[in-house]
Amino acid sequence: MTDKNLGSRRRFLKGGAALGLTTAVVPAVRSQESSDGLSRSAYGVRSRYVTSKRIGDGGNNSDFESEYNTLSPIQNQVGIITPSALHFNSSHGASPPDIDPHEHELMIHGLVDRPLKFTMAELQRLPFISRIHFIECSANYPLPKDVTVQHTHGKTSCSEWTGVPLSLILNEAGVRSGAKWIVAEGADRDSHSKSIPLQRALDSCFVAYGQNGGPLRPHQGYPLRLMVPGAGGFSHVKWLRRIKVVDKPYLTPSERFNELHGPKSVITFPSGGQQLLERGYYTISGLAWSGAGRIQSVEVSTDGGRKWQPASINGPVLPVAHTRFSLAWNWNGKETTIMSRCTDDVGQVQPTAIEFARSRGVSVDKVLSREVRRQGHWNLVFPWKIASDGQVQHHYWV
View (spheres, one colour):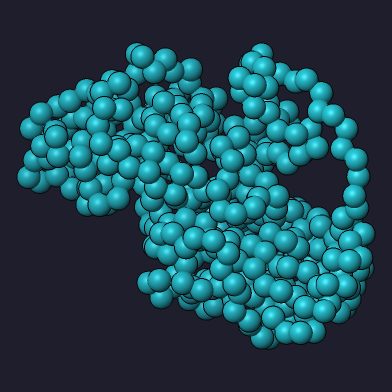
């Protein structure tokens, strides 16, 4: 960081008021109970001054309680871990089933030597692993009506997941010659199922029962979900009850997406719906991730893509996990466009809309159409336009 930047930062922080950084006397916290009637001491609740929340994606019902799909408030997130209560949700059109873990079983069958059933107690006796991984819905793409980064990119979250390696379970069952795929099935209303290549199942998949140090939440698959690191959310079958080892993929409704997600990043501050109140020093911040491995580097442009600057990586860089990045920036008070792009450790670079269109042989307008966005993972460089009054809005349709 240059001396000029440091000086600007000191003046900005001394001024404080630009972001409302004033000192106030905090009143005593009132006695509260959690939603299930437990006291604060038995089950903690957050401060009443913290208001970040999930929102519905509008795809099911205007009533939030009836929403099957919710968006994570990534504009408020710090670090790389999403709180369990704020993890995005996509429930395939149904409310989560009410499953008694004492009665739930996981069945392994098909092309195996020894068909098996595991109770939850039996699974939790086995050797376990904990891994930090993101999950992203394949429908995590912007629409012209979207305003905030929660709307445009809120169908991704990152947690620490704990469970049993699927290779251990399959080896115990004894996979037969000729087996090439598994089919995982959930206990939801529609028995959501997904075919996974056997080699991927053996290499990286695991059966998770824990999230961020506690049990899975109902919307995240309680008591069991399949973790398929790097693949779209459809593959991470929730409320897992059955795995069948087979010789070919099944034609389930979710078979259209099987690829690992490409590199993707987005600036979360400043982002849509926010406002810079005065010119001066700001820290641009955002998230980057890739289904193929680790994030190797992130670049940020503050002039509409003409020049790119290397961003700092803040915190751990883990495989198939969110990575936090930042860049010190002095805003001159003029209209501009900011954006980020990332590169993963297998050499994939996040594409611009022009680059993506060229690779597909279509126009940029076609790339931005809903038809193309629904064909697979949408990971284009995403621009935010900052007006001269500091208002921020997304730039593809302005």
